[in-house]
Image (cartoon, rainbow over all chains, first blue to last red; front, top):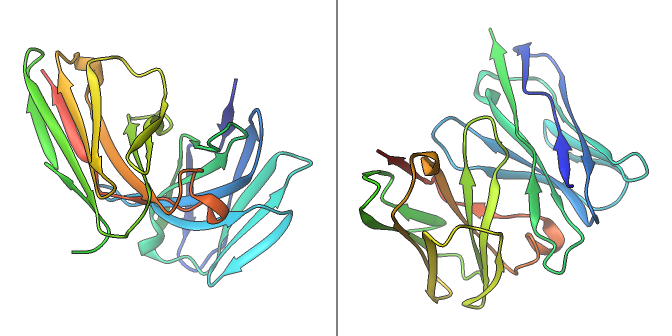
Length: 111
Length: 117
């Protein structure tokens, strides 16, 4: 079957750095995406990695290792507004390359 | 308006009712999706439409019936639902149908929270 594993909850303090890991097992792979969802809000796109390595966008970075079927989202200089759920998603190898999502990691940022 | 808009935001229905969820995207995208989000579970892909044609039906029960009259609008018709169908139903769009294409980016609406009594 296809699955993505990520921690269910992470807690950190303001100003800290937090890393959310994602391991995947899919029938094919085109790329790894990350989404943020605040309570009651829409999931919003953060990043996409199709190739190995680190992609940086402001305070957020995303890493991919295709050989390890592993990626992570790195959040730096945490702010209270970063409290949200974070989902990793894989474009699978099917004919449509649809997005398969993980269960999400709920990040709580404390003062 | 911009982005992806879903109505209604909240819906309560009995098991014998018929209702519909509506989604509209103002982004000029070619693909639209329905996802189901339940607590403690991954987002589940239900249907994918590309250029108004259904290209994916992810083993969804027939009590859920999608309709895509044009590339900007997507409906999910609901009838004889079960309490376990209570969930947040999310609509999304992307430039093409391949899971967000080369950017892996889907644009989501805020969802319709459905409660089945």
